[in-house]
Structures are given as C-alpha cells and as structure tokens.
Image (cartoon, rainbow, N blue to C red):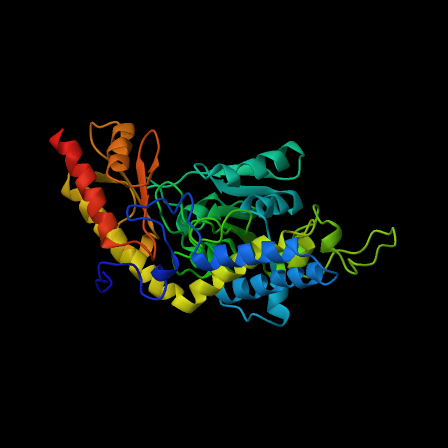
Length: 384
C-alpha cells in the first residue's frame, strides 16, 4: 500500500474542486475543477463580445488542449508527435472512426464491454466491413494477454477493449496485449475509465480514445484520440470531414486529400470553449502529477475495500494494486443493491447503483470523510 495520506484530498490538486464529501461517482462523471469552470466562463464571455479577431483567438484553444493531451500520454507537446493527437467530442466518435476505418477481418471485443465499445462494431458488421468476435473474460472477469493470444486467428485485424473495465475496475495489461497481438494488428483502447486516475503505457495502444468528463474532470463534450503510425496507415479515414483534410481553409469545391496525422479524424470544428476547459483540466493533472493522483486514489481505494469488507460486503473488483485503478464494485449479501444505494444516499454518498452491484470511485480530491460516510451507511444496513 502507498503511504497513508492525510484526511483531506491530495494537496495541490483537491483545492481546485468543490464537490462535497461523499461524492464517489467519478466512473460516471467527474465534477470539473474551478479552473475549468472559470476558463469556460471566460471563453464564453469572450465569444459574447465577439470582434473580428475573436473566432481565430478562440480556435487557439484546440492547440493548447492537444499539447496538454500529448504530454499526459508521455509525448512531447510539440513537433511531429503532436500530429498523433486530435480532439474528439467524446470517446464514441473515436471508436466509430476505428470500426468503420479498419480493413476487413475480425476484431476481438470483450463480451461484457461498455456499450460504447460494442455498437460501433455492430454497425460496422452490418455494413460488412468487419466482424466482431466476443472475447470471454476469465473467471475473475479479466481480459489477459493469454486469453487474447488463445483467441487470435489469421483473420484477426484488431483487438478493442477498455483500459479499465467499467464494471470491475480491472486494469488491462496494455503492453502485454500489444506484445501478444504483434506489430501488424491494431490495439484499440477506450481509456475513459483510466486516464486521469492511473498510470499505464498508453502509447502501447495503436488507437487510444477517451472522453474528458470522467476521471480527467474536463466536463462533457471533451476528449481526444492518439494514433500510432500503424493506425494512420491502416485506418481508412471514412468519416473525415472538411477540417480533416489538407488545405482545409481552401474552399475550392474540390475534395482534398486527408491530412497526414491524427487530424484526419476531424469531422468539423469542435467547441473552442470545450477545448479550453479540456486544456485547463489536463494542465491541472500535469501540475499535480498523475503519479501522485494515482497514489492518493490507491490509498482511498484500499480504505473503501477495507470498509466494505468490515461490514460483510463482497468486493467484486480486483484488490491488487497491479490490477486495479479507481473503481470498487461490491455487493452486500442478501441485500438488494437498491436498498444499499438508498442507505448510501441517505448518508450523503453519491455512487453508481446497478441491479447487481454498487460502484464506488475515489479520486485525488476524495477525503477520508467520504470513506467514513460509506462506513456509516453500510453499518446502518447491518443494524436494520
């Protein structure tokens, strides 16, 4: 276990947030920081007082966000590597780019993936572009390199999975899976449940997509993708729009060649206000240090696991630090999760409640007081 932090949130990070104690639903939505709120308000005000220079000035926020995203992935925020990063309005858009752009063949997709990583493959299959093949997890709900190796065939062109499973919080071995599938198959990764919460070799992915509204805490309609050389070579830019081509500002009525880098996945201009919020969110993660944030999350996750077990709860998530990120899924034996959810809500705890489990997610701003609220709520169930 990492060294115990104090009772508050992570110093240098938590001070930027105002969510109340008991907020433990970052796997669904991460309340944005004051930095993001101030930036988007200021940019909106700037847009409202529009002059002949305003639009061009606002569009500069896209570059700032791409630079911060590149640095978060461990890339230089300038030069050729910046061309590997493009902004997205959400993770789903990036997955549709992948599904419709792949060469024909089969794609391994975990059987219990979040729907955002299922529907693009179903739509592409209906168009006879690719055929998704379900990849069953092991008895612990994990997708491991050995499972992927056993499922590969000569027709497999890609593997698509989440870096962190939304149900269990299991953290995939991205480097191991990429090594297994080899240099000629694409590894497509939905990073939305991991980026901002854990440290992973993100550029082991050939195409990485994420939304910014969860652990990055950038608000809705934000996100980005990273594309390797293999992805840029193999993925046909089916959805490329007018902003994803060379000489995008030349309106000559001709169809222009797709841009060389990840910008080819651009369909149209995105909101520069959202881009400005994303930039501030990513820069805050950079200043605080992702390793420090991940260490704080790990300690609070340990404390939540101990709390659930202390009242007889069954932890459904991995408990090893090497296999988890920030998600703690659990059930209370012989107790309807809906009743557990009501007890948590009554004690000021915000969690994700599903038919078969409860999901708690701690972040860098999570205090020990939030853990105590969970303990009181679950103890109240035992007493009743």
